Every structure is written in C-alpha cells, then in structure tokens.
Image 1 (cartoon, rainbow, N blue to C red):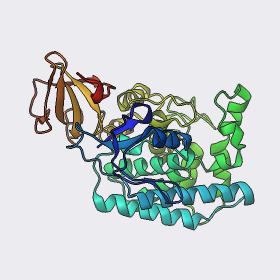
Image 2 (tube, rainbow, N blue to C red; image 1 turned 60 degrees about the vertical axis):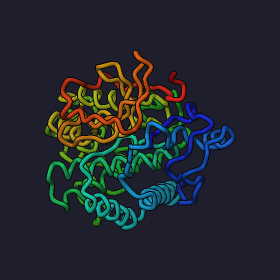
Image 3 (cartoon, rainbow, N blue to C red; image 1 turned 180 degrees about the horizontal axis):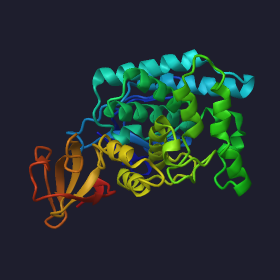
Image 4 (spheres, helix red, strand yellow; image 1 turned 180 degrees about the vertical axis):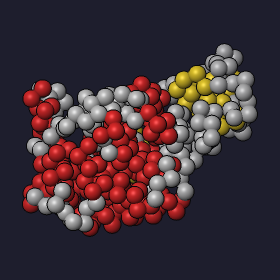
Length: 360
C-alpha cells in the first residue's frame, strides 16, 4: 500500500486501509473502489489523502504505529478534555493518563524502531491528532535515548497535553490563516495557559508541567513564552519541541504548507544547535526515515522506484522496488527488489510525485 493525495486518485484505485471518524465509526471499508463521488465526499470531510493498493505497492506493508482503536480513543479523549477545559475550566487528568498508558503499552510491546512519517500524517481533527502524534514521537525518541519508563511516561504526558492551553483561546483565532501580529501574540500565550491548568495538580509530574510551559522555547533564546536559552530549557521540553515541529511540518492542518519528509528532516537539521537541541535532532532522525515506506523515489540510474522497507541502521538506504525506467520505457514487475544497503552503486536522488497510471 501507499499513501496518495485524493487529487491524484484514479477511478480504479482501491482503498487499502479502513477509514474511521474520531468517534470510531467506520467511514469507508478497505477494498472499496474510490469513485469520484466517494473522493468528493472524503474531501468534504476534510480528508486529503488515503492509503491505496495498486500495482506498484503490492510489496509495501505499512504497519500503523498505533491500532486504529487506540488512536481513535486517544483523539476522542483529548477532544473531550479540551472541550471540558473550554466549557468548565477543568480537565480529567486521570483520563489522559490512562490513554498515555495505553499508547505506551502498545508501542513498547511492539518494539517499534522506526516511525513511518506517512502513518503519522493526518487529515481531520488536526489539533487532537497532532497531540497524539507528538506524544507517539516523544515516546519513541525518549525510548531511543534509553530513558527510564517512568521518565518516558512523564514526558509523554507533557507531550500529549502540550497544546492543552489552546482550548482556552477562541477557535476562530486558532483557525485563522493569516493572524495579525497581535493575534499571533495571543496564540503564543497557549504554553502559559496550559501550564496554569496543570501547575497545581498534585497528580501531574513536574516534568509534564514544565514540558507544557517550555515546548516553544528555542536553544538561541528566541522562543516563547520566556525566551530561555540552551540549558535553561528542560530536557523533556527540548524533546517535545522537536516532535512538535516535525509534526507541524508534515501536516500543517491550517496553512497546508505540508513538507515532504525529506524537507521536514532538513528543517530540523537546519535548526539544529540554534532552534533545536543538536544531539536530540541527531537521535530523532535515526528513528524517522527520510524516505518512508510507500514513497516513490528517483534512483541515481534514472529508474523510478517505491520504498518497500526501511533499514533501521542505514536510513538513507532502504529496500526499494524499481517499477519503471523512463529512459527505456521498460516496466518491472513486483519481483524486482533492490536492497540499497548492499547495492552501493545506486542511491536515492530525491522523492518524486508521479501517478504510475500516467506512465507510458
């Protein structure tokens, strides 16, 4: 399977993974042919891309980081708690803690070494899905850093609640595409607002509290709300700031300036040492492949290929299936597989966006 933008769906494309709404109700079952009318209805619901099964992606298996049940339950819980905060000025910390326990148990039991950015990409309920994605990535990064499980849990709680303060801001302000400088300053208050929600909660760890407060601080001191530099920024907040920035880059639910994974990784590297903690960025890019499974790429010999499987040790040299040579016009069947870890004469030049149905 591979993820495809809805505007690139062909009439004979088939949905590869069942779609659910935030309530856990099935929107569309796997195996359904994506007709123009179905595509239009999905677009009306704010969905921009789906997983499909086609001739070039039969070898590609993309395993979700979380089960649909866990992800939907987590999104629903965050939505409910943000709504509770907006209307009643309170949250059920224990409910959020139970969800984080569920996420951690699922991730740690499956020993996930590599995060597929295509699986992290989201379309609807962005602010809730974003909170889950940041939590998932923070758990993966903290695990890669060999932190104790109790510490990981505290970081995960701060990660999943890092934007909780946005519940106290007007929705029209959060959804505005071109906020004025004054409105941007209002939005920048959300870390402090979120901190005040949890600061007096005995059940909330100091790590979770300070993560919420500091997740927009920058190493160079140009962040907010306090403008703290370098080592004054708590370690957990430095972890979450990287995960937050990466998810914003590949999703960006408001502005639609979605980066390819390659560009998002380059953005983190470019900010390494002055926006983000350099050593943490170096560790983070070891768990997020530049070319996720299902990505179509151009090889150095001119062939078009699809990434079949990533190599946890050599992230830039995955297993690929070359499916077309534009120089010769030759198509290759799915049995043609190259492991770039061993085929050192070849390399990936870049990710490309093409519709295989339009080739030849």
